[in-house]
Amino acid sequence: MHRSGTSATVGTIEQHGISLGPVSRSNRFNPRGNRELRPLVKLHDRILDRNGGAWWRPPATVALLPGDRQERDGVLATIPGDTVAVKDPRILPLLELWRDLEPLRIGVIRNPVAVRRSLERRAREDGRELLDAEGWEALWRRYNAILLAELEREPFPLVDFDRTAELDAQVRSALAFHGLEAGGEGTFFDPGLVHERDDGWRDEALSPESVALWDRLSAFV
Picture 1 (cartoon, rainbow, N blue to C red):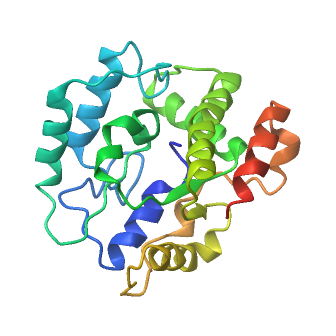
Picture 2 (picture 1 turned 90 degrees about the vertical axis):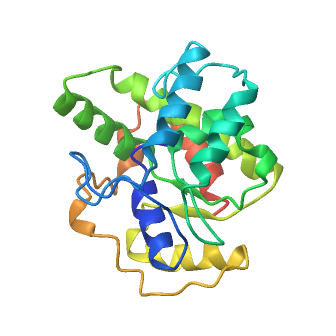
């Protein structure tokens, strides 16, 4: 899900020797960049829009065109190296675009209150308040319900961004799960960039469904 620590996670993965290619390394909302490939984000946004949705309003179903995978492959070809990684939360509602590659998956979770507040703050700063608090939390559930379904179908490593002190250790473990050796020191993450800290977030959740979904997800960590 967006604002869940995916940038910090993939930045740490890159430090351990996995190539990301020409990703964003600085932007308005993230001094270290969101570590996403802009052409890939644009492709994802076009597919969502073509299916009547957007990242903040994902469609119930997604139909792909033959050219979508060809364009995806063209973007991937810009990433040098034998082992490469891509990151974009939009991948969750667009999993059918990626299944044929059988990627080695690493999920990232963060509690719904921290994500909701981060999205609200970013929307205010951007002057585009697309959803209210309940809507942002419902969007968290939408994305993470997809993630849970994938985990239940075939488990893969899950990084818990609420445990930021253990981020590098979690990334190392995730890479090892996939038979990848971690190199480097994993110093990418800066705790000072985290604005939302909700140790007692359960009392602030707007829906018991959010808490229940979190508990089911965290069982995979």
